[in-house]
Structures are given as structure tokens and as C-alpha cells.
Image 1 (cartoon, rainbow, N blue to C red):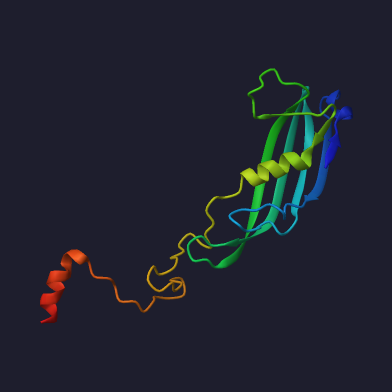
Image 2: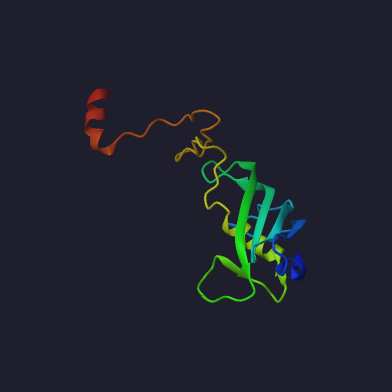
Length: 164
């Protein structure tokens, strides 16, 4: 979504609100497409004493697979994003200021980039997820597996004594 900021660039205190939906379903993370629902974006661009500030909120439900137990789950993802806008940059290495394209800003691109960069690299169905048994592959969140505990190879000689 492109916003024309011509009116608020010259008017201190002016505000331009916006609301739209982003389709990020084509984004792949680890071989999966977790953003299969639209991302709801709301926010505003404010002129604060001649400085333009973008404030945005983005939210959706992510359809993920737990990295420990491989169970599918859904988690809400919310992102708050704020940045300054400028028509030209004095310092080319400043990544915190977005450059306008003339009098326009592609808010969709800016929020999509921030949303993708804000994705978690590790996804767990719960903080205390126990994962899978390394021997039989049972989901330990559903209960203990039936595997015998592996004996420590350093104590194998002592285990033979107990067998006698």
C-alpha cells in the first residue's frame, strides 16, 4: 500500500491514518509457509515538528510446527513498528530512517520487511515442551515412552555384577 504524504509533509501536527491487510503467504521459513492468514496492519504517519514518524501495528496467526516435538500449533504474532521517514538521507548507513519515494511511502513493503525480520528462529508449542524420545520417537508431552533408560557405558562392568 502506497501512501501519498504530500499534505502532511508541510503541515506540523498532521496525521495520516491507514489500515490494510498484507498477503505474506508466499514467504517460506524452513521449508514451510507459516503466514497463511492475512496480516492485519493499522497505524499512522505523523508530522512531529517537521519530522515524519511512521507508527504501525501488524498482527496475524502463524501456523507453525514445534521444533522439539514436531506437533502443529497456531500462535498469534504481533509486531509494533516505529521509524522515522525522510526525503533524503545525510548518512547513507543509517538503517533506522526510511527514505521516501518522492512524496510517497510504500507502507506495505516497510511493514512486511519488519514483520519478516521479526519472525522467531525457534518455534516451540510451549515453553516446557519435552520434545521427542531420541530412541523411539514418542512425543514426551503425551507421556513417558516405554524405552529402557540407556546404561552408561562407563558403568557397564558394574551392571554385569548386578546381573549375577
